[in-house]
Image (cartoon, rainbow over all chains, first blue to last red; front, top):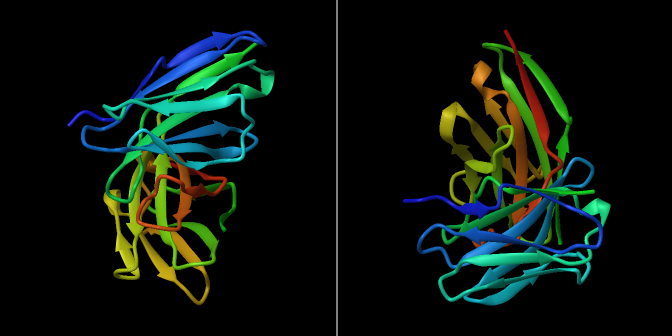
Length: 110
Length: 114
């Protein structure tokens, strides 16, 4: 069974731009969550989608948004990028109680 | 609300020595607890999980953890460290069997000396 796939793996953007990250969950998993990982803040929960509906949301500004498609694939978008948005963005899927993570998308904002 | 505290951001052991990584949790309801490991430039992978069955949980690669409600702890142990155990370890808590919204500790970096 294929694991969680995230694209792109690495990307560089400049302040003010926007970015879209993609996540394909494990087949059959309907829940997809997004986390931001930084050296200073650790792993912070962004949001969770289940059956195309946002089920949970973390404490991030509205510049961070996401969506889920009918095939459970998910995207997250960050608009008006700031330097502090530089991070590893991790996607995880689940249907059994534990999270299965992708390798992440490393975003650098210059 | 729930929270996780990992005591010690860095732990160093010699190869063959006992590994003990500490995790304390706070939860308003019976928690579901997890330990994950992260190798450089990779995502996290599950080591083990506690979901209210046996209090001593065995995981992959020889790791185990014991849930102690009275101490609100879920420490991770391994009897004999191996060089390949060097990584960052995260304790996490969720309020339900759906771990989609989990709260993670700050992580503990384990170094294994030859």
